[in-house]
Image 1 (cartoon, one colour):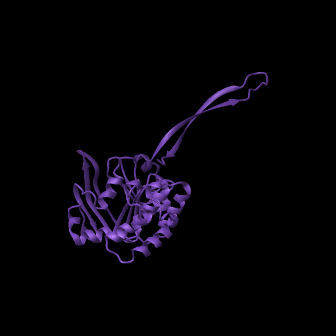
Image 2 (tube, helix red, strand yellow):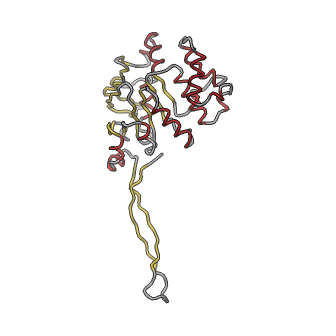
Image 3 (cartoon, rainbow, N blue to C red):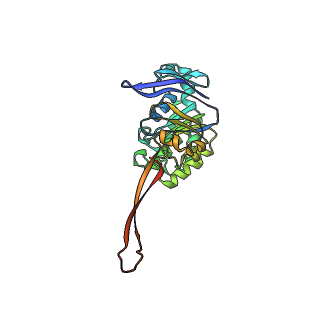
Length: 271
């Protein structure tokens, strides 16, 4: 479904992505891991056709995708129905007067016939039916994220691109999202900082290094067990701890003896 070939991107003369290459099959689920500033959001925007790569190619279902090519009517309509990007901040996606209008917006733009049915179906699936008359700006962060997700799914895309989808969610909503995504038939590519959550989102990891290159592509469990690779990706570090202790003296009339012990721990980062 996705083919990325020797893809690079620069912003302001600085690299954001360098020489990336990977493929994603229909129905596959993968997570993008990496420290802040490594290029995760930029990659997702390229895959959504919002910005163009500076070098290399991105193909969706065999079609080379760039913002310029998406100006063609036939390709644009098909791509916008089949590919959806959920931004990290749902506020940038919500602009309609009600939640119902928000979910209906995509189907209306595409001229789909069963708009009301789609709104009811996906509002129910994402648990926002009771919010349909509400204004999106009045919702909580989690409710906004669910509304934005329902709006994407209302056109029934084939590929879902999710940028830090749990950032605005509390633990209960995060658990709901993990279960919800697992039940979707769509191909899903999801970025996250949360190493604890990542294995629940997908079995495959694409890891971007701080040099903006693809550091790892493979089973996520194998990567999470590789301390060297985690440190190299700045997703973990070795941290020293000092502990003070008191030892009982040999003779009860002597004072307690104070000591300090230092040891080192391996820490992963849930940003």
